Length: 167
Image (cartoon, rainbow, N blue to C red; front, side):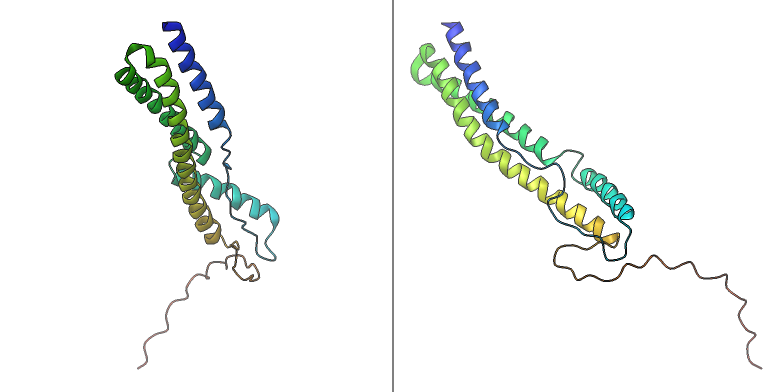
C-alpha cells in the first residue's frame, strides 16, 4: 500500500514537472531598443551588456524563468501535501495516494498560473530597469523619435582668472 502511495505521488510530481517545463519565459529584455543614428554598434552592444547586468541586479539577481519555475515547484509541492492531507481526512488511509495525486495536479494547475504571473511581473520589472538604463545611455526606446548621436562634449577649458572689477 505504501509503495502505491509513493508511486502516485511520484507520477503526480513527474506530471507537475513536465507541465512546469512547458512555461518558457525569455531571460533577456522583451523591449526593442535601438541605437540612435551615428552611434557605433560596438558602443550599443557595450550599453546592452551593461544594462542587462543592471536590470538583473535591479530585480534581485534572478531571471523571470527562474522565478516562474520556483513558483511552479513550490505551488505543486504545497498542492501535493494539501491533497494528501485532504485524502487522508476524507477517505482514511486508503485515499492518501489518490488525494496526493489529485492535490499534485491541482497544485500544478494553480502553480502554473502563479508561475506565469510571477514570471510576467519579474519580466516587466526587468524591462523597466533595462529601458531606463538604455535610455540614460542615449539609446532609442520604442516610439521615441531618432536624434543624431552626439558624444559627450569635452570638459570646459581651465577657467581664466576673472577680470578685475571696474573702477
